[in-house]
Image (cartoon, rainbow, N blue to C red; front, side, top):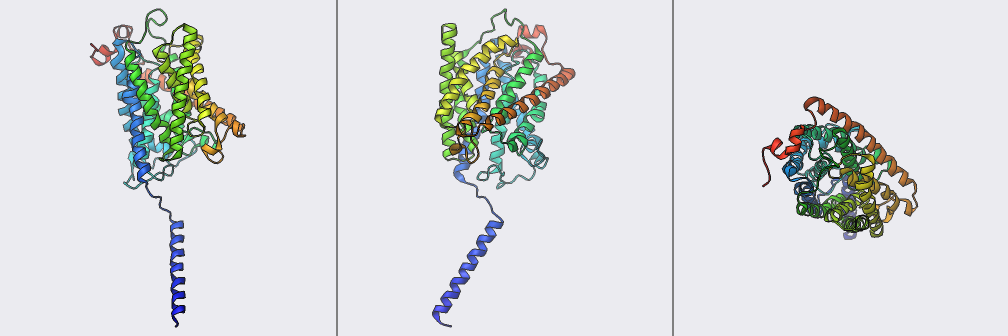
Length: 436
């Protein structure tokens, strides 16, 4: 055998081995965990948790009366603890494992089978432990937002029962419908970071709670003004910063998608803060601190479903409109409908979430969102209708289920504190503590 022939045979052998190796990899792909993506998602997860404790706790705590500040802060903290345990036991499995188009399965109950190198199909470059913790922070803040609607009048025991049941019966199924392989995702509903799953969900539940519990004592006749707006400003600031984890983290990568989501989040928050402030300035003669921070939060809410699909111009328009519409939601709409939503959970999160969901169908651009993910301005007017149907389905299920859960809890332990406890304050009566 000549040298040239031996060389040729060796080359063919090497090529064959390479082809076999390539075929084996194609048959059994093993996604590689990326250190950069993992580092970003660890950070994003911490940022979103910060949105609830201490962010939302301080934001809500500063807006109630002094006699109820500890009970209000306690709600956010206790919900974080309760939902964490429920998520570990069954919530994550119901939301993010294979099951039906309505609800996930039970394959991850107690997080069984979770290993160091486990990954989820929705996040193939980070450990599943990080992904499920990131999703846990969303499951925590959603029920915590509801508490703003019934602040200063619900029993702590009733709140714990309600939030525990609600997180499994309402939040987990809707998260599955939109993100976990359910029917709304199959319909093509776009919700990048929780406009439907988090904000519409929390806002509608808050509205139902406000109606079922009734108005606070002295509502409309007494001064129910916030006791410490400095706490609320600090809380709103923490929410704003944490929202970068909320929206940019939903890219689940440390790339251009996360960067664009962060940029549009900042623009929408700033635009809505200004538009709410100027609306109030015109209507009441003075711009208030509470107004500008509420406006910024409204902008953050409205951009959430759109944050991975729109460009900066779309974000600016969404923010400007959100500030105006949510100002109306927290003032004119609330007055017209006659409910006492203590801290405007529905006016900001329900109204802002619905607006953001619809505007996602208007301003989504395929060049940013990816193939097929485009809205009205990019030639897909049908996406607006898809967004509307998705929002309405979630609103109906949330409203009906929330009402039923409240009635069950009321029958078990009672929902509302006594008149005497409400007048004296929830801090001393429910927790035996006061703020000095």
